[in-house]
Amino acid sequence: MRLSPAVVLPALAVVLAALVLYPFVGTGYGVRAMLQIFMWIALAGSWNLISGLTGYVSFGHVAFFGAGAYTGAILVASAGWSWPVAALAGGIAAALLALFIGYPCLRLKGPYFAIAMLGLNEVLRALVSYFEGLTGGGNGLSLPTLDATRAIYYVMGVLAVAVTAMTYAIITSRFGLRLMTIREDEIAAEAMGIDTFHHKLAAFLLSAVGPGIAGALTARDQGYIEPLSVFPLAITVTMIVMVLFGGKGTVWGPVLGAAALFVIQEIVWARYPYVHPLLFGAIIVAVVLLMPRGVLGLLQLKYRLPRTI
Amino acid sequence: MAVLAVDGVKKRFGGVTAVNGVSIALEAGRIYGLIGPNGSGKTTLFNCITGLERIDAGRVRFKDERIDGLKPSQVARRGIGRTFQMIRVFPELTALENLLVVTRGPRPQAERRGRELLQFVKLAGLADEYAGNLSYGQQKLVEFVRVLMTDPTLILLDEPAAGVNRTLLNDLLAAVARLRDEGRTILLVEHDMKVVMGLCETVFVLDHGDKIAEGPPGIIQADERVIEAYFGR
Image: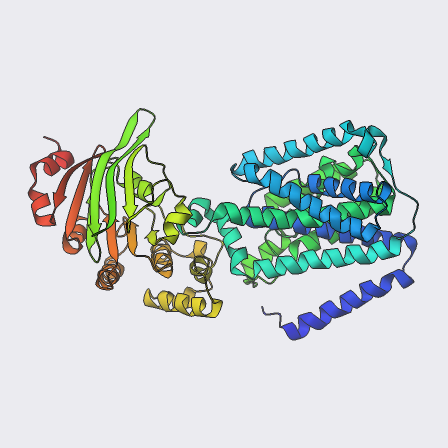
């Protein structure tokens, strides 16, 4: 099975053009929903960069989302920055946090890293609640009123595309293959001359930028944030489930997982608000049991799809 | 001048002394054997040389530079390549990708070199197959040529003959001899005495972490202490 660029590129262009035009024809709900899907693509795609490729499962990836959200919100609310610049600052803040945390934590192996990341998120939430002067503590932080949904839609869309394009570039490069060797056999990778620590650190930094920007954009979009709304474990879990469902370590897996699960979630949530967490749990169990590689991972093995999928 | 000089290297695991002050020196362009009963410290010595284990005492010098204390990746980049007793290919990477990951420099050249090496071990047709789907012997060959991709000066082979059929083995041994002729140094751990006797110019014998003998294979075979270590008194 071969997908030639002559088919794929025009198809991608049509989809992108439709998404660009959508805010002019879509309903308010539709635009908001697409905005959310963009956000989930950026989050899931970023998690995939560190966890899908290197196998180092980050259980606290929402920490970067929250750090970006607070950085962006504070810069907008207190320093009067414009939101696009504040969003970039959110990405940079998240990357710095990743550098600071990655240095000690990426030396930990497997499950210990996962737990350390979980701890990081709790620590950040506590810190944000504690420094009330800057963050508003548990009362949250309100941003000046501004209706920028359409602009944020585009910026979030660009972010989703950027994360996916970066994933493509990484996975098709030797750098990406080296990240996978860490997942496959870290000791052999080291013995073959691959500096696994610095490869992990680079992937970790790249995986933090997207969530940082997405957090700052979400803060601006919602106009109000509080510790519980931007540091919930549920966001990390959702990223993980989306990637596992779509196919970890693939280019399009996070996109597929984000879109599919978001739509399922919306439908179920609207009809059966109480069983929706139950359904999410059921999906996790089903994916892990029936197709641990996710939809695309399964297809990749079965039909020998290239890494560009 | 020795390419590799291991000097009084010790490695303890809890109360067990796995390597007890072993010294060996390897000259360029030669094939050396490392033998000894199970648990005598052969693989641990490999791990001490390649940086996978931190040594407790002694020194390891490679091309006149101390390499003990370096990370495994740093040791590898200085020109020491190795294979493992239990095969360690990257299963969800293709055979060709397994070779590409260890290369630097322009990718087209690396791919060409990788395909050449796969051709050389008669795996060209399986270049795009996941390494995990290959047979044991094929994986062993992938691991072997993966080492060659890094263009190492010193090659450590941990039981290259184990589980490999005769025809394949002869190709493999011919390849090892050719690497020696190119000026590379090879140290191999091997239980198959025919392989050791046929290939190695010098053999080191370990027993319970001590080096008990060193010399040409013919003399080693007749050494009292070696016979005792293998068969008991």
